[in-house]
Structure formats: C-alpha cells, structure tokens
Image (cartoon, rainbow, N blue to C red; front, side, top):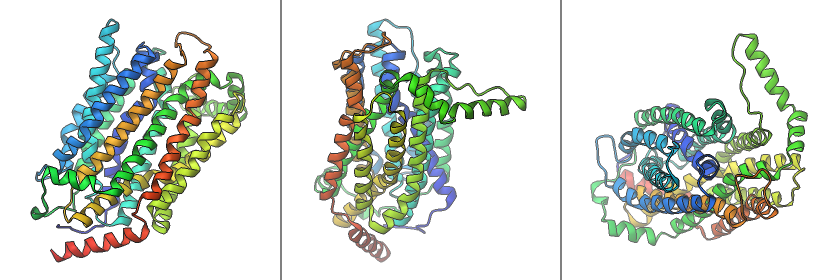
Length: 489
C-alpha cells in the first residue's frame, strides 16, 4: 500500500468539509422535515407518507452496499472515490429540486410522484455520499489527523444543520411569500445550486493518499466474508442504526411538538423575556438605518420558537465538537463516544416530564443535549475509518468503501425507521393536519416521540459499545502495525 505525507492542510480539510455541508443541506432537510413536507405541504395522508418513507428508504439503504462494492473497484486517474463526487454533483441537485416540487396531480399521482422522486434522491445520495465518506479513510492513515478532519467536517455538518433547523422554515415563508409549497421549491433550488458548487470544490481540493497495492485486491465474496467476520464493524452497524433512528424520530417530531404541545402564550413570553424579539427588532433597525430591507423572521410563534430551540442545540453541538478531538485523543474514541452518548440520552428522556409551560427547562435541556451529543458527532465516523483499518490489519487487504457502505446502510435504515415512525406514530394516534387542536392521543404520541421513544435507541447503542474491542490501546497498535507494513512494501 503506497502513501505520501499523511498531514492534511487546512485548505484540504475545509475543502473536504464543504462536501458534507452540501450533502447535509439536503440530508438534514430529509431528517427533519420530510414527514412534515409530505403531510402538511403536499397533502399526503400521514399513514401513506410513512409507507413511502419506509419503502423508499429501504431501497436506498440496500443500494449502499452495492455502491460500496462499485466504489472499491473504481480506478481512475483521480482515485477511487473522488470521481464519484464529481459525477453525481449535478444529478444530486436536479433530483433534489424534483423531490421538493409539488405538481398538482390527483391523489394517486401525488403518491407515485413522491415515491419515485424520494427513491431517486436516496439512490443518488448513496452514489455521492458513500464515496465521500470513504474518502475520509484514504485521505490520511494518521489517526490524529483523522480526528482533526472529523472535527472540521462536522463543524460544516452543524453549520448545515443550523441552516436547516433554524432558518429553513423562515426561508420557506420568506421565499414563498407565505406559500409553503412555493417556498420549499425556491429554498431547495438555492440549496441545490450551492451544493453543486461545494461538491466541485471538494473534488478539486482533496487527494487520495492511502492507495491499496494491486496484490491487495480481493473478490466480492472475500470482501463480504471479511465484513461478516469483523466484529467491530457489526457493533458499529448496530450503533449507527440506533443512533439515526433517534435522530430522525426526535428531529422529525419537534415541529409537531412545538405546534401542538408547547404553550403558545408561554413560548411567546419566553421569546420576549429572553431578549430574542428585541434582538430581531434591533437587527431590523440596524438594517433599515443603512438602507437595507428588514430581516423577515416568521410571525408564527411555534415556528419562531422551534427555530430558536434548534439553533441553541446546534450552537452547543458545535461547542461540543470543539472538545471532541481532545477527549478522543486522551481517552480513546470508544470511551469518548459512549460517555457522551449516554449523557445526551438523559437530556432527551427528560422531555417526557415537561409540561407545555416548561419552556425554560426545554431550552436548557436542548442546550445540554446539544453539547454532550456534539462531542460524539465526529467520533462516530472516525471510528468507522478505524474499523476499515482494523479490517486491513486483520485481513491484510483494504476494502474501505464497503466498510463505509455498510455504515451508510445502517444510517439510512435508521433514518428510514425513525422517519417512518414519525408519520406512523401520528397516524396511530389519529393525527389530523386539518385541525388546529389535536386530540389528547395525538398530543401524547407527539410527546412520547420526542422523549421516551427517542431515548431508547440511544440507550441500546450505548450498551452495544461494551462489545466494541477497538479501545485506545488497540488504536495505537493498529496504526503502528499498518505504518510498518506500508513502509516495508
């Protein structure tokens, strides 16, 4: 296996990170708002939306391992994984626009259109994001550099998440002139254009350094056999599925939680007393004083409160990410990930005990959840890169993309389950998007979704890490052994 210098420049780290920002402008929208878009914007019944999300999600998830096998066997002058970022950039943008369009079809036409476009979006996401994720495993073989790269990468992810969870609904209202369907179309057009440009920057600024030698090539059956015999991979697959079930379930349920459970009057008072309304007023006074147009923050209290709530969580996730490399280097990735995930679980579970008037406690819990979960965010993908190293160390050949493909399968499977659960729980509890006040059953289902139901997968994921054997000592051993092998060849 040939290598060049394993140090990454700031330019390369930033360039690589922009690819995640581009993908997450779309990905975070799917995680947080796809159920809402289908039920409350396109007018698809909740139970049907749940079915569409689940079936299309399973198709996309099953494509990930196939894409991994293809990517591992791609050989171009640009490398194995970089060209896929180039080839898929424009199709990704086009299919995004189609997915968030709302053509005026009949009931059956809407269902077919939603299913086809959502499925295509998940397929092109795999063809783009699987090679992108695998690229992190071959940019450098230095594990500390990987920790640093992950920190850069997930600051970009959090920036995208901030845009989606804080600014998406305001942008939808502003760019649509109050028409949510038009607003989603215009907003996603903007995101698609930005995404294509950022993907091209990622392609141009990165370089594959960990290059398998020809004698390390293997058959598809050998890759699959190695994968199934890789215990750390199995554990990380389980963890990935469970974590993304929670992220999709709670993320997709918050919009309903603020719209139907949280007290509107208490939320309005909180926004006023906390100084947020004064901040928006001061911002607009500043803008108008220099001849600019006012910033149009939505007047809807629930949307406004949800945006601030999400924004606080994301800001403190970024703060948590800043501590991630320190803890991972000192205590090892496994221990850092497990402890941060366990602590963050507590601040999800406590939402079960809040009343509609407990606005301050909701925001404090979101802040603490964001910080503790933020520490874990870069560690997950650095651990998956370590699993690829473990496979090479154990089997003496490298199959980076199939390792990441399996994890993306887990990610999509988790998102599919979590996203379908959002719509499924609503349907089970007789949610009706046409009424202003939901039934007690529907409200209880929403409350359970953001608390008890969301905390359980996190808890099981934490427990699974007790069986993950790549601790700090083994990380060091694997890195040193692989360096010696690569130098000797």
